[in-house]
Image (cartoon, rainbow, N blue to C red; front, side, top):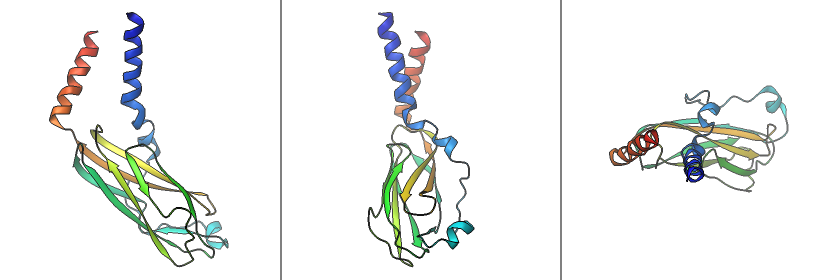
Length: 168
């Protein structure tokens, strides 16, 4: 019986912390950046360069369970075709839609759509999307933020679960 209780507590811990692991630590600057500056090394390279209109977005206050979406526009300001090989959210609740394995010519612009599902994510949430592309750095980072207002019914359930854990 004691082993089952410990196993249940361990599973609960993993479930409650799985999607929040380190996402807030990764986000150090949440202000919206206009026209990302490229480093001198990337600017002089003959390869592709991604220049974003913004690299972060704040959804403000949203309700738990709401799914919100934003777009990040970028232009290939380099001298070669840009190819985005992969885009991954820091959590399963953050889903990017992007032009995968499509050659983006110099001077062309595209968008990356990022959706965030706030189900079971009350409080301040900071998530990121990592892009793998053929740029000089190989990786680009986009960030989103939201203050999720808890659903009162779900909050009561979480509070009851917390009290039950304290009593055991």
